[in-house]
Image (cartoon, rainbow, N blue to C red; front, side, top):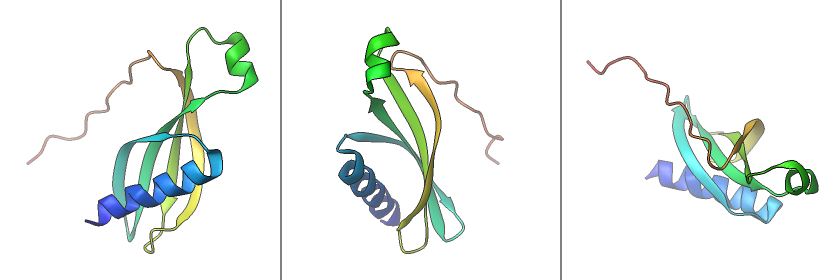
Amino acid sequence: MQIDNAMKAVTRFFESRWNKQIKIVEATRKGDGWLVRLEVLEEGEYMKQFARDEMIGVYQAELDSALEVVGYKRLGLKCRTQLEEIEEGPPDE
């Protein structure tokens, strides 16, 4: 399945660059490519010194039709214990 290949490509890209394990939380088709949202434990000195809880970075990666990562951005930070609000889409018809 192509979604599995997209998720593997994102995992290889980030884990090889950051040397940290990531968790993919969403993968969505976008035209010929993919948008993939992932989470990674942020372990910077600032986080260790000032955070009471472990901080999780939430990122979005964009893949092209060849499943190459063509861009990524950090969407935000959250505490590990923070629950996400789930956006509800339109009802299925």
